[in-house]
Length: 79
Image (cartoon, rainbow, N blue to C red; front, side, top):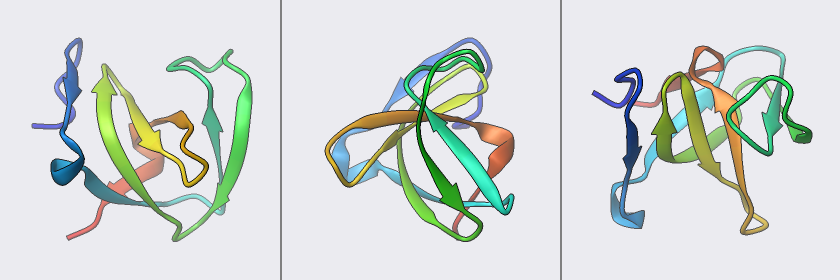
C-alpha cells in the first residue's frame, strides 16, 4: 500500500502513480513538513505524479524537474 506510515517508498519512473488534487487550492512544499517552504500551489483536479512516500507525505515530480511534497489527504489516486 502506498500510504504505509513510517516507510519511504520510491517508485521507478515507470511505476509513478497518478493522483488528483482534492481541495480548491493545495500547497506543494519543499519537504515533507508543514513548516517547509511552499514551492507552488495547485488547483482542484490537477493531476500529479507521485514518485515516493514518507509517512503521510507524498513526493511529487513537478514539470520543472523539481520534486515537491504534499500531504496525502489532499490527493486521491486516479483510477
